[in-house]
Image (cartoon, rainbow, N blue to C red; front, side, top):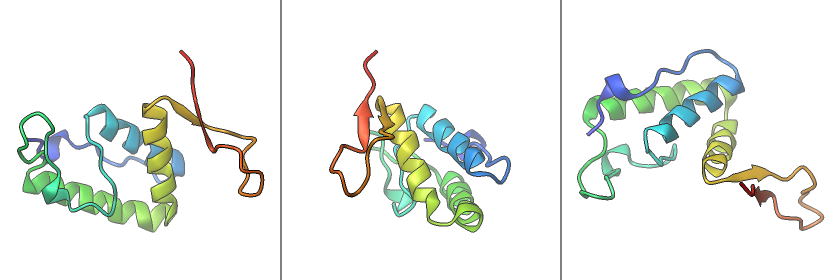
Length: 108
């Protein structure tokens, strides 16, 4: 179970700083969303809580700060970090009108 001292601090105030926080969260193996009930996040292998109360509080406070700094872009920045973690990048050719896939799998 992770406690607050394992949760990264949000350092800075830019969208890039928010992205760095999301990248660090993913490196911890956490797949979380701002609308999740953090107390209900479980570890896949043991089905036990992944976060103690101090970690839940720190993440909730971090989310609040992110929404103050970048608003609803918090969601898009988190999604982009997660998709990159899964091996996808944003497709610069995609628009809502042309029907081109927004995410492209990176071949490695």
